[in-house]
Image 1 (cartoon, rainbow, N blue to C red):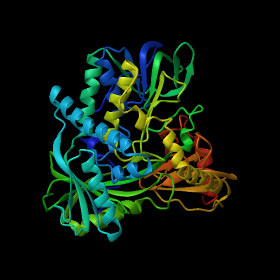
Image 2 (image 1 turned 180 degrees about the vertical axis):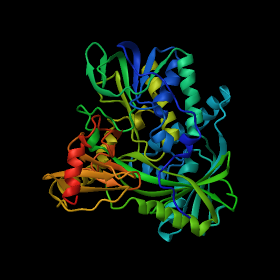
Image 3 (image 1 turned 90 degrees about the vertical axis):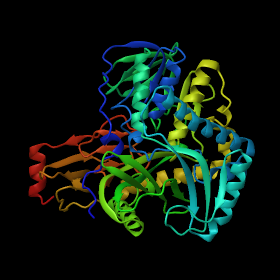
Length: 515
């Protein structure tokens, strides 16, 4: 069974495109939300229902980033997180985290029913299982802690899937849905209620002066009393040190059609490499999502091997008939595993941030919306302590912070000193780092044999980019920015494109030099 050459997400393929206008004039609002993913859209929806005058600005099209590439599990089961939070922080924090995410599940369900949103919301049980003896006690501990927190959790030594296991924890009353059908309906509610959404409007700076002024790439200004940064990875890093506290990972999804019917439920293993499964009904029949193969963005060798590994796993458990979709996604990870939601800094009461959902963005994005709505409208939230971006418990993760920043430093140095080949053959559909006219250059040859050259220095903080063969992009190994083969920003925190050269004379010269 062949894997399709070009990646495409089922969610985006099965959703209508959006066409909100770009911001062409300066505007004033009470609250400006930067970022049109499910987090920003959900926050705007909840604020609009409170009568807040607001605008959402999105650099590309809303909901086409991480939201459009998720696996869309609506669950409070985030690996084995509750026993971890209890042991590293406190049981009180574990209780707050559980309460927030359990509430988020019911909130999504209630909103779907309230607005009659046909988003395939389906109740499911969620499982974390292990095939290794080393994880049995960890599973047992998670079951006990989840039950203590009031979550309906059970221990099991088998699962409905035909996979042999050692132990599993099952959370009941969880769910799955179609994230774009849900969030696109929220976007309509926002504009129907007087809120504004602007696409193709990239924020490049935020200045504080009698409130905040956001400057866009087109030079327009958004003046706001309060600002929410919901850009997945924060593009704004003034004194917040978020680049030292966040790292990015990519993961991969195969959407397969199989002879066997999926037994229901949502599954993920406790050990590495990660293997996660769920099903989705489509117009063409049942799809089974096979997910995993996480690695740090921009690090590693040939990324196509991750799809191949997933296909090998899928073949060992299902009779595959087709693989109509495949895609990858990017997740922002925090050093202690808990998102940063709240004031950007302790002394910026009207500047907020939401980031670091890990691989659990569906519930945490809804938690984020509820929490930020409460902070903005009422000045407090019952969950603000556990999600506080300035929480003192981050100090307990100091070792993780050091390790992650040593990794960034290693990648930065490696990119500057690694030898770059000069005489390299580049086939159609292939990208490589080469030396062109004495400079480190990224070269990609498209299917029409055209050569595309970019400067491989990331415009964010100067790290050297690596080629991602699976997605045909240039990825930053330091902070996760991604660029297209012709230099356009695909994913932040970078806001500026790469220098790009497809000059005929340059290309012809390089070809003559056996580039």
